Structure formats: structure tokens, C-alpha cells
Image (cartoon, rainbow, N blue to C red; front, side, top):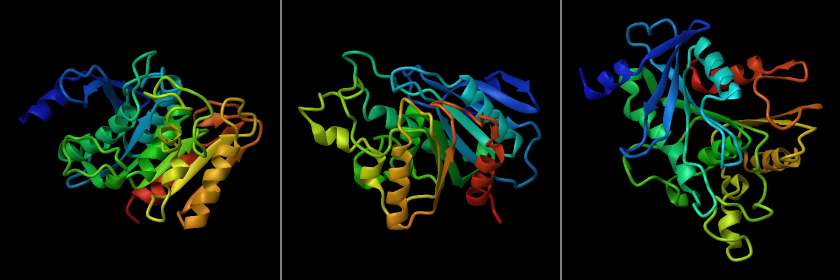
Length: 279
């Protein structure tokens, strides 16, 4: 038994709603306390089967939140029920005097690399990995989608393993402009380094080679105006990136797959099916 298989075997599985969950799986280097929860289909893979995978990135203003919040559990459970390996991650959080940008983004990229590195043990197709996240997690999801080796955000370890994804679902995220004010995740103040803040916005990195995106946003979002998603959608349209903008009338900031009487399960799962499952 390889060390990785042994590690995954020792992580106690839990079962809920016909889904197997493995809690607190280490995915970062030794010494890091952040871990991941893996949501797996209850039924084991068929011989030779490779499943698509999705990284789930939690919200919390880049300073809080965690991988086992209600939204992340709902998304992970739903994806596993539909045949996906879902990986809900904790990542480094900013604290006053302890900036984290771009290490928080690099943790998301490390998660993608971890899935590819352990694709055989998890029966994951390394060429069919996506990401989804809400709020701060939506921002990191979008940044994961639009940045690559030439953007300066790649982790130093496992450089031979790609961090690119094939599909992204950023939800009600800060995406379309530089940050309007100082934020503790940045090492500098906005007035001292406006370029640092500008380059933290996904819209600054969009190219025609980016993966398809499904943007979800509510009209009653008082935290991140829906204009952020509208502007990113316009930029994606401009360069020819396949995308869909779904605006939910009356929906507030922060929702999972159900809001204002809408069940978004079919929309989200259908999007991932279209781009991550063989046809």
C-alpha cells in the first residue's frame, strides 16, 4: 500500500445521503494546518473509470469561513451524488498584520495539483477538473480560472503539474475591478500599491484561452453588487470565452444551490456535466 493510499484509508470516512465523506485530508506541505474534505460517490468506480473532480472554495471575506460550512456541504454532497469527486478546501486566511495574498490563491492551485498528483488513488480524470466557490471563494475560483504560469501566482512546489482547470462557477464574487479600499490580505495599502490591488481582480487577467464559466449573482446582493458579474461576463464575451451569466432576481449575497424559490442544482451540475464529463 502506497503512503497516499494508506493516508486516505486512515482518514475516517463518514456517510450521509448516499455520499462518502473523508474529513480533514492533508493536501498542503507538512506544517500547514489547513486540510480538505473529500466528497465521493457512494458507489465505487467501475473498472478503469475516471471521474471528474471539482474544487470547492469557501467564502468569508478572505479572513474567515471554513470548508465545512452549510453551502460547501450542500455543494460537495450534491456533486458527489452526481458522480463527481468534490474537494472542499480550507486555505490560509488573512489576519491583521498577517497578509495572505497571493498565498490564498496558491493554496487553491495546490489543491488542483493535489488532485492531479493523486488521480490514480482517487480514480480522478486529471484532465477534467473544475472549481466552484461563493463570495471570497468565488473570487478565488475566478482567479484560478483566469491565471496560469505567466501570471506570477504559481506555487513553487510540484511545478511540473498543471494548475489549470476546465470549468469554473464563481458565485456573487468580487471580480470586475480592483478593490475599493484597503484589505488585510494585502501587504500594502491601496494608495501605496494600486497595481497590487488591480491585479487581484479576475477581470485583469481574462484571455481567450480561459475555461468556460457559469456566473451566479443575485440582484439583492448588498455586499458585492451584481455589476461585478455583469462586467466580467462582458469581458468574457469580448474575448470569446464560453460563459453563462445567471442573475437571480431578489437573491441576496451568499447562497448555495437553493435561493428565492430557485433550485440551481440542474444549472450547476448541468454546466459541469457539459464541460467535465465525456460526451
